[in-house]
Image (cartoon, rainbow, N blue to C red; front, side, top):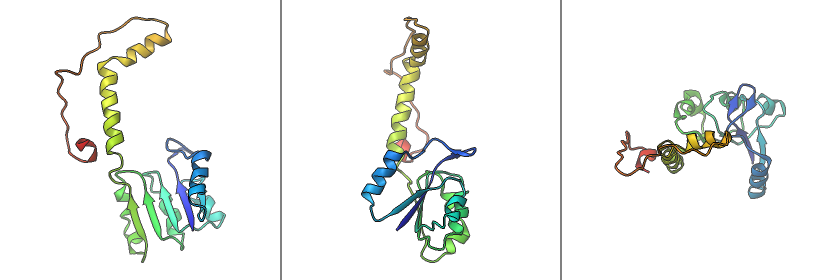
Length: 165
């Protein structure tokens, strides 16, 4: 089995959700029967040049460039896009017409982490942590006027996976 991984691209290099050697080693240990390659270009031309035709493509990006590789890979059985909100990319009618091709995404996995992030951001601003960090850099030990959460009201617009958390 062959797995091609496409990361988040910014300019001509990977950014953000990069995959480090430790994680790749762990994947290879857990999936010893799987040959894993990480694309070095957003469109996978490097994989095509190496004649690396994967049965599985896992994309960590909302950039549709990885679909260029998918369209050239006759061995492809499954495309999985980890990014939430990327359904429009995977709804390509041509891809949908390929018999036996499974297309999935990770809808819903971001609910808890995003809810935690939002709660952290609320506390960051209410408690004036930004001011404390700036003062710490300047070696100033002055406090601001942090607010309490008690008595505050938060509006949640939309009850998707994040809003329900």
